[in-house]
Amino acid sequence: MGGGIVLHGHGRRARQAWGPATPGGKPELRETFVRIFKCKRCHGTATVAPRETLRKRLYSAAAIGLALALFGLAGLSLPEVRERVSPWAGAVGPSSAATWRTVVRWSDAVREGRLFEVRRSPETWSARRVAERAATTLAARAPPPATGPPDLVSATFFGALAG
Image (cartoon, rainbow, N blue to C red; front, side):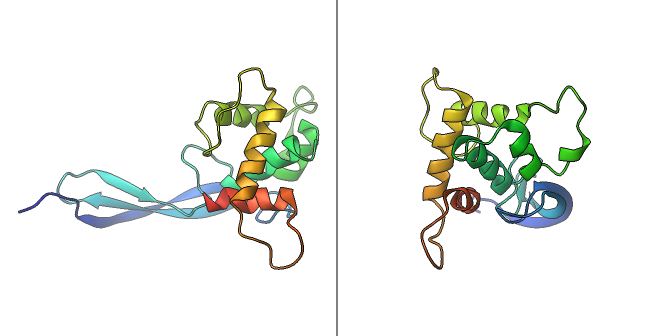
């Protein structure tokens, strides 16, 4: 008998997806489900999730792409990006109100090759410049808009979903 995997449904589990559902939408907390499969031969498991779900991230891929575009392309401040992307924007303490370190961490993850497939950025680049490169790369992956020229921020949102 040959090798290979023989997957069998092994249940599903809820996952949170933070961020807006559309580029101009209100940030929200959505629940999505992932399917878990178990191999009958090796007993390993595989998880299948919607495209917006990123491994070990609470924010959706589209929300992270949007944040990178707002920071890197639109030049918004970190608090302004938080207002547009985070469902918890109104619940920050006084010490966090002037920044949003999460976007900088996402830029660092892009720089290190741990988030999205983006050409490596030089170490000397700022987080904003890395976010700009990531956003333009993701925007290039977006499907063409139905009408008119593409809006780069929206294209980045949809490009993050494209992979």
